[in-house]
Image 1 (cartoon, rainbow, N blue to C red):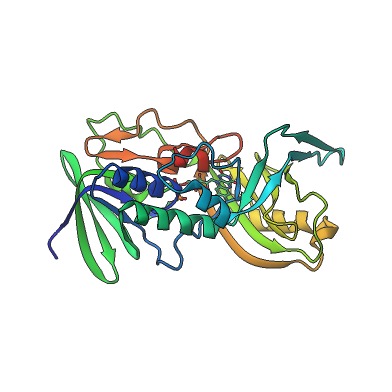
Image 2 (tube, helix red, strand yellow):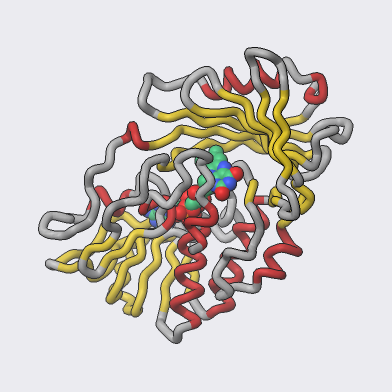
Length: 306
Ligand SMILES: Cc1cc2nc3c(=O)[nH]c(=O)nc-3n(C[C@H](O)[C@H](O)[C@H](O)COP(=O)(O)OP(=O)(O)OC[C@H]3O[C@@H](n4cnc5c(N)ncnc54)[C@H](O)[C@@H]3O)c2cc1C
């Protein structure tokens, strides 16, 4: 197959890739958005689902549509910090502001729809395997439903998330791109979506508790009966048994008796400072691929959107 030519090839249809693709397409550029997942799996991404709101999101997408479709709990008024040593809770109110918890799959689907509506060509089932490089990066190769495809572009946007494969494939010698990256600067995280029989009392709170290693457990209510429960820890020690620790903690909480697990997913996320430089000739990394995550909270959606 001859190469397909675009102004911009965005690799990864998560938050960073969709906003980048929508922004470039709205500027009149020809954009390919390459996503390894199928159209039905697109947007299904491991996340705690907690965000402040859409007000800081660039308006290259319909933010109101995103809010209506995916913000399942817009009434988060406080953060609760549990002290496992004393059993006490510290509640910190958000004052006039409020936070939200989203249906992350629907949120991701809407972003993909919006990138498409902005004019980007969204290619699902397209797994980018390599970069094409001749001094500058000039494109990528991918496998798509059994065939090899090449996408030529003036700029490749690496929005492939944490531990991006593209960064293993690109020769950054002679560029400013930050390659001083190692796995200890990442966090390993896991979450379940759990349905509880009765509404939880803390449906207006995001709840945090320290994990046994450097990291925390969270309980974020998507609705009063659908809770995103999870935990993450910094990978500067031998792997922590995330699922076991989560199960242990769930057993101490009466509201999770007779709960049903609806979905499970885990992933790594960067908990380091943003890359000193995330650019090389023909190449720019965004979102998790550029370390744009708040290293204290692990919140990466705002950094990926901007
Ligand atoms: C368990 C967990 C909980 C979290 N909780 C929160 C939270 O509550 N609030 C918050 O703000 N942040 C949270 N984060 C962080 C947040 O999810 C990320 O920072 C954010 O999703 C980053 O967006 P991104 O677009 O850079 O990457 P991603 O969302 O990871 O998207 C990358 C996309 O690239 C695709 N891709 C990867 N490789 C290829 C390839 N080779 N070819 C084609 N496509 C490819 C993937 O399929 C994916 O769609 C959490 C992260 C984890 C792991």
